[in-house]
Amino acid sequence: MAAQTVQWEHGLLQVKLPLPFALKSVNSYVLTEPAGGYTLIDPGLRTEETLAAWEEVFANHSFAPEQITRIVLTHQHPDHYGLAGHFAELSGAPVLMSRRAHRYAKRLWGADSTMTEELAALFALHGMPQRYIDEISSNLSSFHEKVSPQPLQDQMIYIEAGETLELGGSQWELLDAPGHAYGQLCFYEASKKWMICGDQVLPRITPNISVMPGEEINPLGDFLASLDHLSEYEVLRAFPGHYDSFTTFASRIAEIKQHHVERLEQMLVMLEEPLTGFEVCGRSFGARAQQSPHQHRFAMAETLAHLYELEQSDRISRTERAGIIYFFK
Ligand SMILES: [Zn+2]
Picture 1 (tube, rainbow, N blue to C red):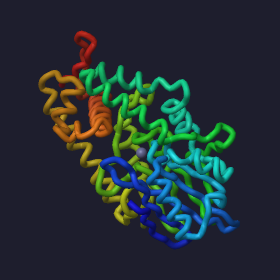
Picture 2 (picture 1 turned 90 degrees about the horizontal axis):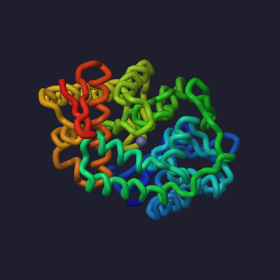
Picture 3 (picture 1 turned 30 degrees about the vertical axis):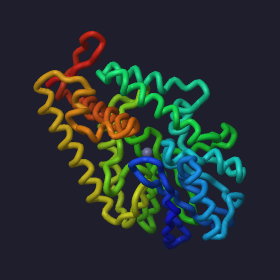
């Protein structure tokens, strides 16, 4: 896939970069800085195809990676963060992200990361057979090369919710957007009513909400609360991490919330009998869950997010039998 670009007013360029997943592309945003240079938001996953797409964008828009003055990340997922270190190395530009997002990136891909083992233990506890865990573990390990080289500690500048960041000559308010990725930031420009929303609000698909080892215990609850917070902002155009920009921010938030309410209700009905997380995943996602190890991990972790939300709101309980957790109403 060649890179597709959309030029917006105020020097904002949307760049659709290829992804080797069911989700075909990820959006990067390039902002022209009035003082010279460019800010790059979410540079994409490190693959040969993505690098070729960037070459094409640099050629078509007459700028070079050396002119990048800042690399800004909405969040630490590999399809957004993967090329941050590469472009930091080429340009000498700093990498801006929240401290929490960076901490999580290091937990995932640091030299002493135990995330794969922790995730394997979590999924085993929730009844996933070992053969699927093995597939998921090797798929997760394959991401290391797609996020390398990683930004060095002295290239990092931490930005946090509540602060304002000047991007492309405009003031953007940084908003905390947890649930999909803890530490994720959305960027709101109040005069134009634009929102760069990362993966928190997406058109066409609902953002993946995953229970991950060592993170908060109720990502779905936190995500739903974050959607309520974001819905307080008037947004005329939203620039998401995937798919096209959209003008229906408020109604899209309502649809995403409704999706989760319905899925929670469906799971509640299933749990008339005790089931493991793996069993609930199979009944909720069917064959789709097992299309690839990547999909399977998302489906399993998303199922757990719903079960944890049901548990946190006292609608279900858990019991443990022979080292495996069962949920029931
Ligand atoms: Zn993401």
